[in-house]
Length: 100
Image 1: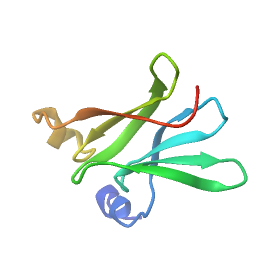
Image 2: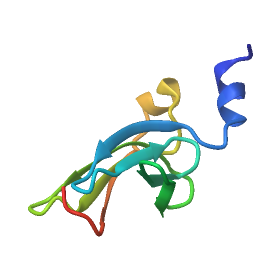
Image 3: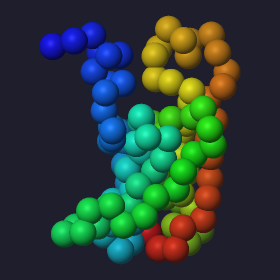
């Protein structure tokens, strides 16, 4: 075992919040990979949306009138002490080719 920050830094992929789309695919926020990935049963990762530099993805969901707007909660890091007084967290949106 090691300190949490050290263990997380060694990860290549850290799934966090997720959502299922109308096709049955799973959209997963990758907390250390600065991306949201689309995962399909039996195929693994079939697509991804990269976040702007310096942000990590911590939750995602699908919404909008047609369920094709991917919403991503993003921030520079997940450390509560660093985020408590900072205001860099953002809600990002992008359109995806699927219906919820």
